Amino acid sequence: MGRTVLVAVDSVSASEASIFYGIELAARMKSLLLLIAVSSPGSPRKSQGSDVARRYVDGGTESWMDRALAESQQRGVTLEIFVASGEFFEEVTRFVESQPAVQFIVMAAPKERASKGRSKFASALERLHQEFEGEILLVEKAGRITRVSDLYLKSSAQERYI
Image (cartoon, rainbow, N blue to C red; front, side, top):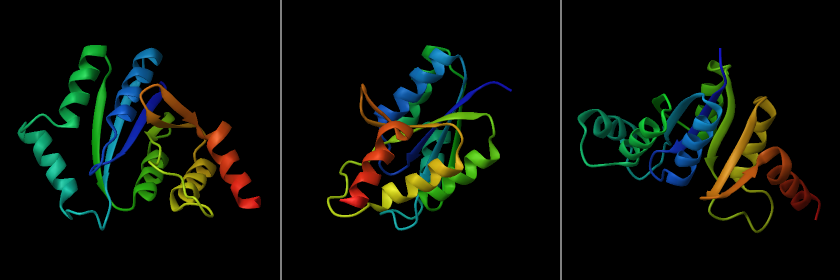
């Protein structure tokens, strides 16, 4: 089975920069692109996951999913979309465990890094990094990509010892 790119997004605040970077990466690698939209408990609208799926299936207003589908078709990338409900990193971990061909995970970087101590995001990201053998790429904005293995966890480790 070929290499696969996974884009993981929070369905409430999906980062289009990470989605479009994932499409670009999959196009360059000529690989399958999986997109998982996770609706976390405690998000403003509890039924967001089903609403996201319903909007996509019903073909309502142009959403980020519609734009991702159009862009992937334009780039010749096969896109499969999954919707999950639960804690974001738990769902992403569960998903990659069931998809051994995933080589890259692309997701949005947190908008702000924790100023004191380690952030919840950094701790969860470190656990995912330990369990996932591929590369995790954080997209801060278009053109600004951070490889977790090279930079993000090293800076987090330094924060722990300062």
